[in-house]
Length: 111
Image (cartoon, rainbow, N blue to C red):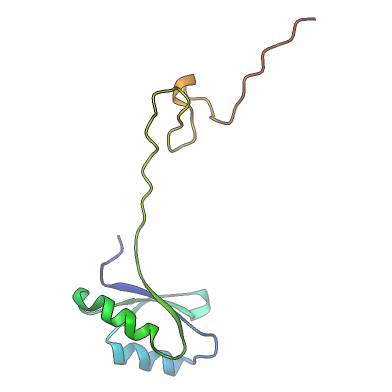
């Protein structure tokens, strides 16, 4: 689970490693993980109460493309709406015995 005291910080491509280290040290952030070729960092802020201030400081720093909180988003299953046409989170129709919701029944033709 993401911490309330973490930021995702994306640096511009022309910012060198020494400058990135200097910025992180100045803001008191510790690098947890590097992604996207080292340009995107997951950093931990020492005090959760200062998260917004540290985010603003990163955002105001030349060479930083963006700084955003590390958030976890959960999408709950869609509840049934009582008409027999609702799908659960797995895309299965509750009203037809759990068949794939994308399946359409075509009746046979009589010849």
